[in-house]
Each structure stands twice: as structure tokens, then as C-alpha cells.
Image 1: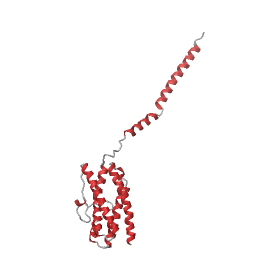
Image 2: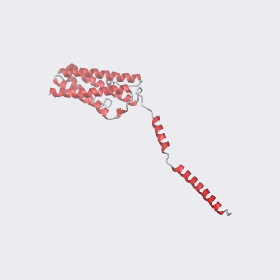
Image 3: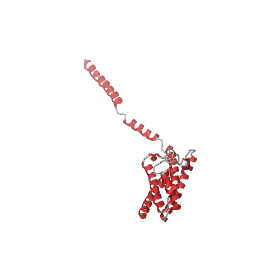
Length: 215
């Protein structure tokens, strides 16, 4: 019996096995590793640090510092109006705003003190018109406007107070619309901010109605 066909058969089998091994190795090396990538992405998301509403960050500190001086100037404006305004509605609103902003300013300063962070009061800035150090956050009145309100009398007090306080409230909304303060973290401060924005939006509508009634 000839062994030639047997050798040919064995050669074919060996060739097929070898070729299969080569193809299997190539497929394993070049097959996309979709599952490991998905797992890596999942692990990455899991490892991201979640914001803790009981902790504060640099944006919370910055916001509090701005709100202290912003609120304190609002108190100045409101205190002049609650003592000199001729319209009962204006006087009552000015008195309410003075109390609200005083409480807000104190709360922000209390938080900063608790966090061992420094801050300035409005009285720490020199009262010089155009001075580079005087705070100019959105909505804050100029020293010229404050002096005009202080020296005003009669109905002009009502008119000037409403104009300055509307702009003052709208300034806080403008800062919020900028998006920077969306990065705030401290939960209690975020709650106070949101309550203040809602209340001041309502007060703006009230003041605009008072303006319309006084025309």
C-alpha cells in the first residue's frame, strides 16, 4: 500500500491547523476591545468626585464676598427711603428690603467667618467717586446716585429709590445669568441664593407697579 496519499492528507491537515491558528491569533489581536473600553469608561465615571452640598468651594466664597457688599449697599438705599419716602407702599417695601438684605449680608459673613475666609464690608472701601477700589458689582449704585438720594426730598425720594433698587435687584439676576455661580456647591448658600432671586424678582414687579402708579 502506497503511503503517498497518507502523507498528502497529513500535510493538508497540518496546513489547515497551522492556518487556523494563525487566523485565530490575528483575529484576537485585531478584534476591537469594546467591552474593556466600556468598563474603563464606567470606572472613570464612578471615580469622579461628587459635589458635597455640606462643603464649600471657591465659587461659594467669591459669591458670599460679592453679596456682602452688594446687600449692604442695598440696605443703605432702602434705609434712606424708609425714612423719607412719601408713598406708604414705597416706605413699607423699603423697610422690608432693608431687613431682608441685612439678614442676607450677616448670613454670608457668618459663613465666611466659619470657613476662616476673609471679606470686606462696604464701609471698608473709600467713598471716592471713580475710585478703583470701590466695588462696582452689577446693579450697584454710584456714589453720586447715593448722594442724590440722601439729599432728595418729597416725591423725588420715591422715584430715585425705585430706580436705584430695581437696578440693584436686576444686578443680582445679571450675575446669576452669567453662569459662573452655577458652580456653587454649598447647599445652604444655594438655597439662600435661590430664595433671594425669587423674592427680588417679585419685588422688581412690585416696584415697577409703584412707578406706574406714581406717574
